[in-house]
Image (cartoon, rainbow, N blue to C red; front, top):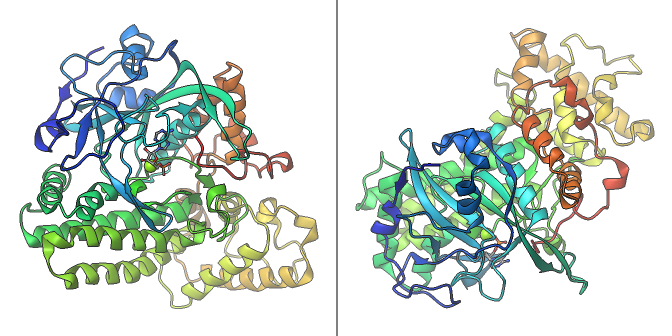
Length: 524
Ligand code: AMP
Ligand code: MG
């Protein structure tokens, strides 16, 4: 196993002079050198063949001793200096001070085919940023992170990736439901991969400490390596940088809304400066379409991070990043106008995205209304979002709605209680479908073409919460086969894959309230 190691990060940002894993406040430094914890009996559960190749390894390397040792944290590679990053963040709207990589350790950066990847272990023990927690992760949350990272990539949602998932052989104490019933679970480590794991919170921590010198260094570093078209060291450059981060964040959230992904913990420390989906914790997928749904039990009261609120939270988070960058720009106006534009850009891009879900290529004035009305009915009829949009593409532009008692047949599978739709709801659906079919007649593409277009934005397979849970239950018993089955299937979420038809189905009733299948806690 041979990796092409580069260490730009370590050379270019100020390091914490105190080299150890002890918990502490770290000032005037972007990161601290740490040593990963040696697991007692590491075992490979699963590896992403694509990421193995992306970082320059061969598939057979995953069975090597070196792979097991490096990606479980057992051995530090020669010529590398693992580190944990310092960041702060707003958690649920309140400034939380220093947070940092409490259980994430960057092993190294590797270069392959002109791409630079940071490799980061999650769950490899305490760091200066672990606060009162243990720095560990459990199998349950690690399976979820590993599978979802890869699934999101194939859905074309910007995301961090996952190379490998290992059991540590150690037990980890967790109070999964926060009800005082703590229990031991299997410990695990995931190796995440991304060009960079820098978050909004990395900028915020320096700003909170009035450390302008380091905000500038971090921003220049980020621009230099990840935004090469922008000029570092200038006010215009910093403004452009903020604009670019806003654009990327907006695009990411639009994708989340398109596929029905709910992040669950959109704290500013969980927003990537590269606009990548990061930190897969108590995330979830919409089953029944519901704007108010959040998978996160910790957020049950206020539902700050509910599905329908994600675009506004991204805006709020960008405003916090804008505050952190203000000392570099010293003018509020340009930053404010970027935030203002976010709102109008969002409205426009959201419409474009929704039109694509409906197979509408032309732009007609009444489309906004058509989309709004659909959202309203979806909200009041318990409808599986994924199945609804996927099956909508089966409708022809001459589909008969008037005088057809079975006009809902093409999308009926998406309803949780298809036989209990009351007459008012059926009437609302009828009106909507009448408008939709009429609207389709303004399109120039054929039914076949439209179906193809719609099927390329409306996935057939997503990582439904209960599917991940089934894979976890098996993995806990030592059977990793379902993890690979789901991994393989989710590589082609838009393809028909008839052999996987069983996963193109509504959540089974047993999963409605089962832990892990509907709501999740942060305790992972
Ligand atoms: P989160 O919002 O779950 O991404 O985490 C918030 C903060 O808590 C971050 O600084 C994490 O690194 C830290 N954290 C979460 N879980 C643990 C853990 N088990 N041990 C140490 N730090 C943790
Ligand atoms: Mg986090």
